[in-house]
Length: 276
Image 1 (spheres, rainbow, N blue to C red):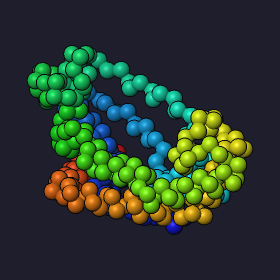
Image 2: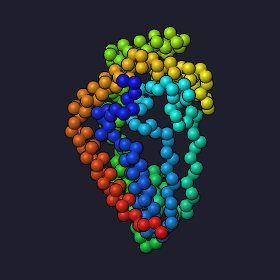
Image 3: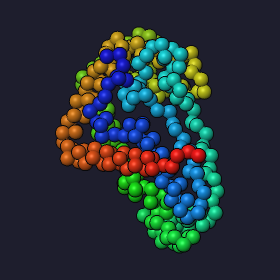
């Protein structure tokens, strides 16, 4: 297997896709704006800052795999930032009253939209909901729990844990040793595995150096030569299946919750008035 980009891992159905995450974000922004409007506040939530995201969850899970892309871009996937992005612009300032409606509190120590923001204030003849309009939107979407609308902890744990377990598995360790020998034959002796190669601090530059492109190309070719991705993916998936079986009841609830949240997001977005 040269690339795992088109392959799904067993845990994938229990994790948010990019589209599902975007849908929840859009629904929350919609509900917050609608709630603020009830209090006579015209409010446009800040546009989300979308980080680089692979096309699929497995596209770069095992590092670079395309020698042509590696020869051009180095270890950073095409379109990925090579240096930390600038901080997002601060949200537009709100009056003290509008801020209280948004967050449910005027206490700077209370987390906006959280349970500590009790709400209950009267603004414009209406009662501010618990957590303000942020809290109301999160409650409506059922994203006000521990995961705050993100992936469930059990699914995250399985997803990350299987990768690390597979990396230390003798079957994967064997192909990684052959990968390291392959890299040495190409002049790269410092790396015991692909994570060390891609994580070399020397590559933290605005543009890929010739040396980085050479190393990334060697990495991709050595992976292909020794079927690193095929073995790693197979073992990774096997560990996930074991954990999914052990946590079947909890994961069934996770999948049901994902479905419920998406239905609520769809209802919120479907209730939008037509554009003027």
